[in-house]
Length: 132
Image (cartoon, rainbow, N blue to C red; front, side, top):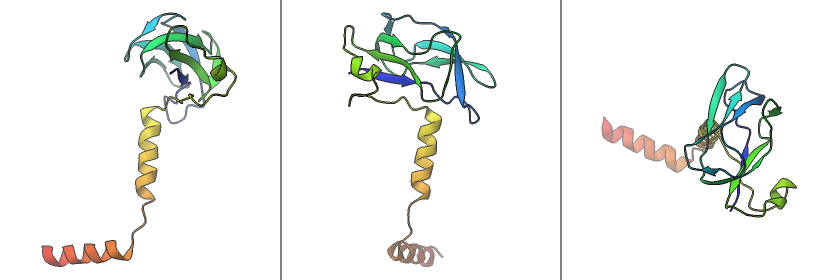
């Protein structure tokens, strides 16, 4: 199944990035951990590595072009795979590449939204009494 790779958010203030250089070409084999491209942010030029393996099937942003975060950057999949549905914005196999920063933020938001119930409070009080 093809994986859609979107322009990552490489810093807190990054709104868009520019592909400074592609290090892989369409048709190249890609291994997890391979550097796909160099991306210029508002602060630095950073290497962007793949979290997937397969064949680079499509490049969505050419060298020297800029695009907002979450814009289609590339598609990696099986050689010869039909990606027309992904290019047209449809298809249920679309998976957005999340940066580790986004995953951490999401996990933090989920844990901070946990409600404390009366049972939790009672358990905490019991623990504190036993601990003393």
